[in-house]
View 1 (tube, helix red, strand yellow):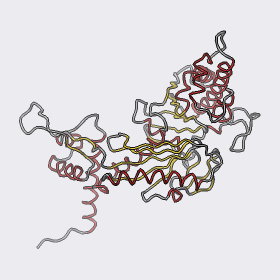
View 2: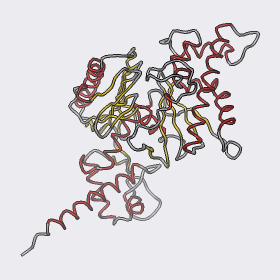
View 3: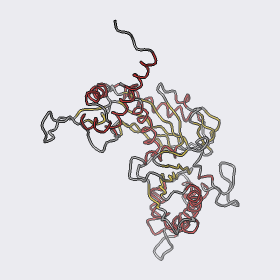
View 4: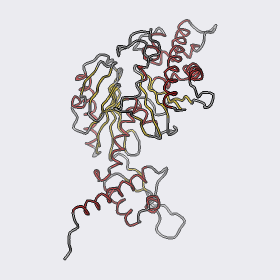
Length: 403
């Protein structure tokens, strides 16, 4: 007679199987190219028979895809390359920001399956109306994906402010005029949704590109947020509220900020502040400012128009203010790479001289190490990409839940 294994032993066996399934999934997803079952066995240290069983589960569950077999030049059966499966399981990135609402859907290959960006003006807005509108946009897209047989694993909602992700609570978003808010129910979506700070999700999106393991990411739009990445992981601080570089005071005698303080960085280097300084409406397209700068706005010259010179002066003011705040961060957290995203990505050619000059002036370690200031590589609305990737990272962390 066969005796059943004790419950504790059965639990350990179950945990081991799920752990091995994760190992196999990660081996394929994190490899620079397709792997065969034999490659996976070598990478994980698992027996080939075990790997084959686990791969079959992942393929049947739609997480992995088998490519046509290829000969390896050796005796035996040809290898069957394994890759992440396209358009089977997807993650959704959502964002409510001051001047747009956005949605981006990524599949397990990293491809964009769907995207919506709706421009608007959401200063001091009603969160129920704004998030309800974003929820409607998401619902339409999610329903379409499900109709195609695609599994929607969940969503991340990016918000520009202090976010308590564990409690699902937005504490304050000064530029939106929102505070003490539980935003997820206002979306009205029937899928798991978690919230996160916009800049932190945008920083995570950069990890898919050519960045070092540690860097400071700064997202410059109407508000200015930052994220500290250390060895490819976010440094969150005690409550996850770090990185509010937009509210670093660069001039105590400066104008009042939406947060109530005076002389915050956003009042000099926020997108609306730069546009106003350039003589443009605060809701003007960034392309209008870039056009003026291209017309000779970097420095006064005989051929530059008065409008171009004013735009150049506004950007120089922003560059020095930004450099001052960045110098404080670099001195405090000791990073040598600064990645500028949002509007700063396009403005960097004109911001760079003043930013780098102030960094040289104010960073104590500047004589010893070069501070690399570079443009973000994740593209527009990077928090949408970061949010979708975080959902899929959760799938990869627990593939048993999806197969």
